[in-house]
Length: 471
Image 1 (cartoon, rainbow, N blue to C red):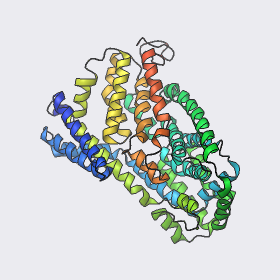
Image 2: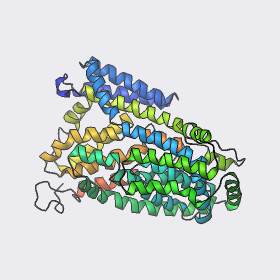
Image 3: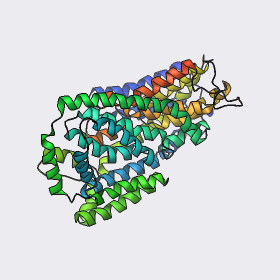
Image 4: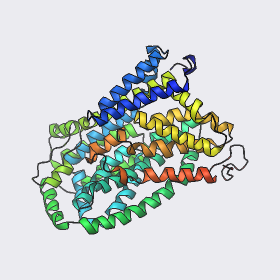
């Protein structure tokens, strides 16, 4: 990737105009109902054309696109693996068995906070929110909805829990990227995030408990659960053995096996279990891995929950990631992002709180533009590292701030890859967003710390881990 300093220096007004045009293309596409994919294509065209008009060669833009999109390769492979695994888990009885035992053991009163906690544990072990959503999240979502709990509320709990682990797990790509881009040791970065994420998680548990009790009292309809149990038992060989592929995901993650080979390996094992336990043919299992499973039990609720998965179900999300990466890379090549930061956000920053707030604003802006959580982390780490060093703030405050915004807010952006994925797996559109509490609470705590100086550590102190600075 070529050095951006070789390109023509932009005026702030020029950079702002390009940004407005790109966002305008996105918003217009959504407003006129042509879809986020077309909006991203329009945004890409505007960003690429602007970059060339502003003096960049196509080869420079192309190199930057290859670099940024290429950095998402592991995420794309995980998506493909998860899509296949979900289809295989359904035809193999893993998801139906989770539903069956969940319906028998869980009560409507605790299902919502339990969903948050179990999805958080799963995502911490697996290091991927996508994997947690499509496995534990999908099963618990089905259980909750079947009990009469609001689908958006259940999806919000799945989302919050799953992105807790995406933010905190040492196996997560965003966790590692944030630490690397800011020059922070991995476990120093994770320790720093505990200050904002753990209090937010505790507040989430309280909120989900209260709302879960209200939803259960108002909507719980247990009359259909027996029918669902009979239907599941009749359609699949329900067995504790069918749960082993799900447990295997947790085991390989606890052993810190890299996410891509772990997911692919678990998918292969799941294929074997599907053939042995359900008597499915190799062709049927492979078709489920490719196209997803289609349930025809005759019970609408069961069919809606189980008709999903497959590699093809992920193609829409993959397209969003590639297009959003292309758009963001083109804006970076043109110097638009750097100009907006240097001439706008950082021009009058003199205190730590101003720098932290500027980092958050930058991350949100780039997240909204790109729709992908990794790009703001990569670019934010490179852009703000020197500013934190100049103000003598430890870089783990920077790495934490990047994740407090980019990672945790990704599913709150309707056109983001995360939102598209959640809709693909759970089928609730964007109705879950008001209930994805973790994404709203974490940044509020981060802002509180920025103004009070709590957990804002000096970089030149002998006791770096304990001393804080004046905001």
